[in-house]
Image (cartoon, rainbow, N blue to C red; front, side):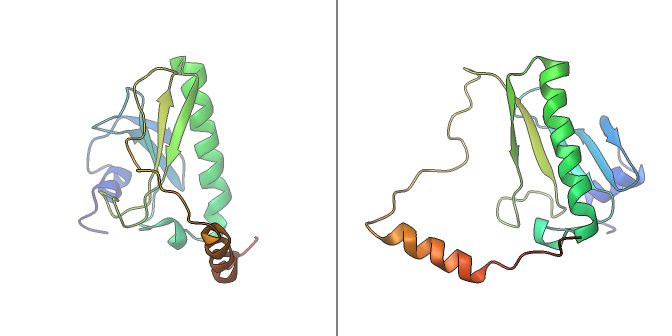
Length: 141
């Protein structure tokens, strides 16, 4: 996509601090990190949201995310990581990207994403049923 900054990075037309460079995937440091080492994993070809990711790329995408989460611990001394994907809402670049952020207990990152809500009596079961009814598994291959 001509105006997508992540496509430009993947094409080598925009600078980035590359962490992972594979035929279908690219990971690079976020320019505005939550913590140093915050990585963005993207498919090389333009895909806007997780539901748009082709079935054949899911396993590789998740495997790369796992590898990056492990690297946070081994390379940065993090105790763990925070991984997140926004789909459309709060997606600052309309190109699928997985945030992998190094975490350490006491790092100060608390509830910065979502205010917590409570279900009314019986409401949780209703939401679960609605989601079960709407869920359509992707192509398993």
